[in-house]
Length: 161
Image 1 (cartoon, rainbow, N blue to C red):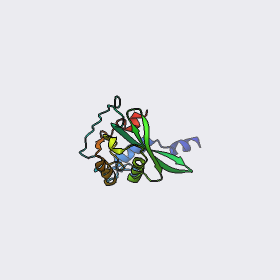
Image 2 (cartoon, rainbow, N blue to C red):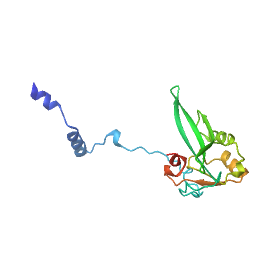
Image 3 (spheres, rainbow, N blue to C red):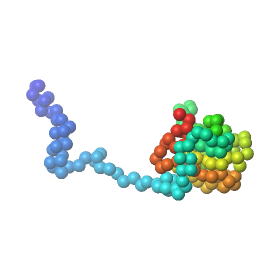
Image 4 (cartoon, one colour):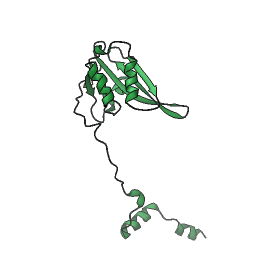
């Protein structure tokens, strides 16, 4: 009886060896093709801030980032605008959608004149690089700066740590 149980147990390595020997490929190990959107990360806009988070004049550089919080078992998103002069949150918004409108609403809550902002720095997400935000930035002559591709420490997420 014990001999029967041992013969029914087959190690995973043995199965792998036999499959390789017979030229069989598991359905689960085949990589599936996934289309990648490269437009939001390939913008020609430079990283003007270059991790110089200290020593800024008031409203000279404003950085932004998005985060998410769970409210009543659903994800909600928060966008903050931080003035690097004193790390003060000068604008914020929250909502159920992670989109350009969330960032626009954060800009609309800034109490000071937006023309005082010299540089707006954020990550390369499509929430920050879009037509709606481009209109706000150009209307108030704000210089745009995007973090390095794939580097989360270059935006407000890295500043607020």
